[in-house]
Length: 367
Ligand code: G6P
Image (cartoon, rainbow, N blue to C red; front, top):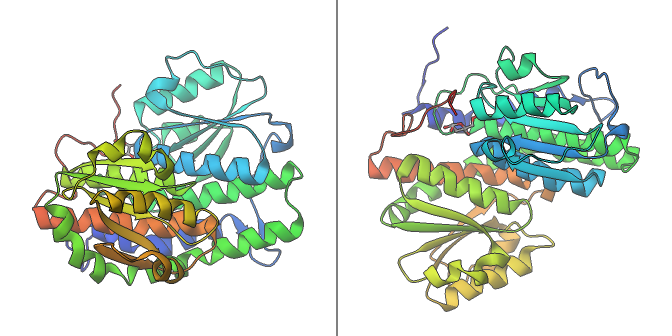
């Protein structure tokens, strides 16, 4: 059947709004509801024997991989290496025998990622893929196929495929941790519980769409925008910047909040909006102190946090976006929503072609 936009003005908007449903659909296939355990498809090898995981992807899928690196190292204590596919292929990476190479791709056809997959296989790695198109080349060539169930994604800028990738990767991290003996049954149940809370939290985030739309004209005037975050919010900051560049053509950079002082702070003046992703939690105070360094130099800060965080740190910001208070594990799935909506509304305000941005292709099958 033809894919319709329904009540939405653009496919991207429709796909942003579909996320709670498709993430729930995806999670359903990775969770046993009664046992509250993570379930992966049948495997020909055990994660217990995997000494190292190498994650390779491009674009938005790469940022999903970067979030997964934080999770896998935190929960499973397994060393994770991460690279973009076009670099991985040619830098003669040292791959440990018995290692697992994990490829993430919406299309399953991105030329650089597919070539990286073949290279890893030739080097004796086991190959796992997280893909949205189950009939794709990458799906066919994998030892372990982990599908996302986002449904067809039409907007060139990836949204729902990204959050579904995160859902699968969180389940994978929990499974690897169990098999490596790093997670008790109780801890696994706890992770499963938080994952199942994600769709409702994503809905709560979508409810703030009007606030985001209202502040979009402010950002649309900017020539440069910075995104800051720490921990898993660092890749999310980069994803936020990528979304904005892709569809609004505004120059944007994502930075680790603590790295600001080593360069980008030189850019700060009152023309550069700085969007800070800071859920309350263990890293909150640190990120806020980086944010205050920006404010002290006249930077215009937009703070995205939960009620608790906003109550502590809204002073001096030019705008805030409230997110529901969530467990740190699912924060990336929830904070994806405001960064996508912000890019969307800024692009609409600028009148760019949201679904078909200039110079970009949905699936890049050339090197
Ligand atoms: C293109 C798209 C991006 C996407 C990237 C990787 O550049 O415009 O949105 O993130 O390819 O695509 P993949 O299908 O491998 O996830």
